[in-house]
Length: 444
Image (tube, rainbow, N blue to C red; front, side, top):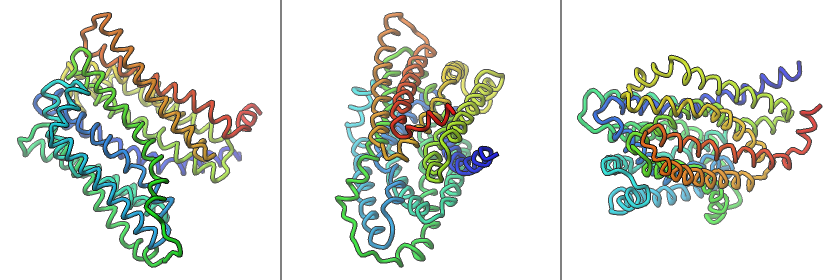
């Protein structure tokens, strides 16, 4: 009976986080569904995916501003110190975005490093130019969301995410029917509208809190910019390693047969899987919170198993039943040449939701034990195995002289999941040092 109560309490720790993650991850399939209804959908989806991947890579240092704000903002002086840090960071990253999107540096990245087809690269450039303020908007709202969470107003974060999704959908439908813009540009407008509106909502939600509880509280000590950089840089590095996988996969697919279709299919598969993986991703923060509330390890393990099994079953239902055709051809409106590899990619990724759940759970355990170097090493291992798998996959595909987009996509899928499996194996071993008694508790 005690375990049932603990499981129920754990569910209510995890569920709000999972719901917020899911709302955020639904952005990708929503955008892909709109872009698939434009002319040359493969080119437009692939080009938008390139712009989004590069923008995500540039914004990686600001994603963990939420954690930095939670940890460091405790009054007027620390708020303004972190604010100064945030403004400096987002100004520099916005300048970097402009340097890439509006100069020949983009050609160097798109053609020399990524090896993109000409049409995909060109529509990607325009989409990236539209997304100039992407990093600034996300950095600002992540900072304010951290303040909201720090002072017990986490529900406003979920509200902001829901409003963002509604905004993205509304802008996409409007531009689909009443504009002549290319699909990739429409995708960029959709996500930009979403992050700008969410940043505005975060500001409106945070202002009363800032007046009442933050700016009215004076602190004796001053937080230096050097101290903030020292705290934030390891977090930013972790995110950078995670997000490097997307452009790395794009570069590999550009060197395989039918690159336009393969890149577009990967963009759809990856975005769709995020909606399923979001329930597992939420286990990281939920595990930390649960362990802080003294949840027994066997209870936490059992809950992670349930999430892993549940998300795997959900993906199986979508990928291996008639829902697959309904989803790809009717909901996403994909053309047959793009729908077929997309469904195959979803089917081949069946183990990924479970790997995501277990990896997130183990990272939470390590973060709770303050063994964060193990988390960084796990992510570095993931990236290294992914790069190795892609390289081997390209060599095998060329040796076998494969010519289909499906074969190209399977290279990406195999490398991505192999990397996830390697990371989970490493984190499982590292977690034995974090909770040495958990194995004995499970055995008993």
